[in-house]
Length: 92
Image (cartoon, rainbow, N blue to C red; front, top):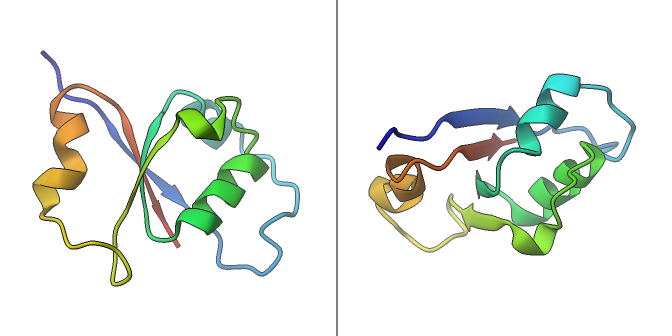
């Protein structure tokens, strides 16, 4: 079985995160991913909405990492990649 692809998806630090953006490549990528590793779930979900995510957010698997999350080793975050699923890593 082939491994999945890890996509690095930047999240803007701007206060105006809700402003309209036109990044067709990002929109295409996020609409093919259902698993995300994020620093801040609220900001990530808002950015996915701005990027016109077509998948209902209730169907997403979101793993939160960082100083405010549960402590897991790296294998926990990347097990879906090893299983062949594409994963989006969203960083602010």
